[in-house]
Length: 276
Ligand SMILES: N[C@@H](CCC(=O)N[C@@H](CS)C(=O)NCC(=O)O)C(=O)O
Image (spheres, rainbow, N blue to C red):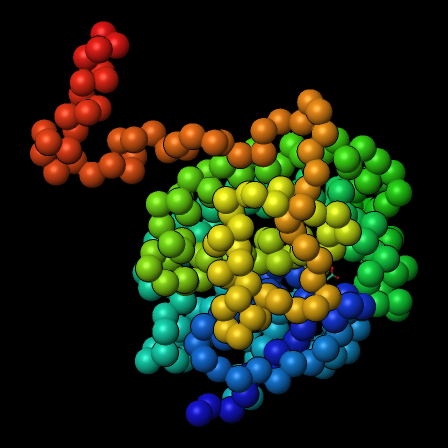
């Protein structure tokens, strides 16, 4: 067994990791079956904790070798431990994962940030409060208390926008196919981030994403079940809020059905001909 990997965490005062980058890295190390020696901490003092090596987390030290940046760490783990389960089996996994992740950040993290940023600050460790307040208010150009105004109207707008992810996970067990890979961890990290700051749930109790999220949080002995994390499911809708998810089929049939000859397309062809 290799030596444990020294892992610099970025957590809130409830003890759960907040950063999606750090979450994805925790899963990457667990996927490889490697041990972690966690160096705890929050937003401030990262430079001091890492001996001047980094201002950002995650960062790891693997057998004396420093590796910074979540993607570089995942690539390092695959290169250094090729006999252990692969995270990024093919270069296309990186490209497609970045596509999904960019969409998820725009669709979910951005609006959720404007809903939960007060908890993000209030639940950070006390020595982080001033830094988080100043840096995030500078980033948004507004006071934290003003950023969250109207969040009860914004929260119900997010679930319907996640239909693409629901559709693909209806067809496949994991983004990695039969078993999870780094694409799953990057996407799960978005929901783990949310669970670290959500004082009110962002998704309805019956959201079909629940199956994949629950299975993902349960992986590796319940890595995503930290007691500091808050429930993601239980959003109460009000009259006039949009339907949170599609009740019928989501994906155009030609995208998901396989053409194995006229037999397989007969029903669809009949529908097409009836309509013409
Ligand atoms: N490209 C880096 C981004 C890392 C990053 O931005 N980490 C944030 C946490 S989400 C951080 O360390 N922030 C420190 C701060 O806000 O001062 C990666 O993928 O690891």
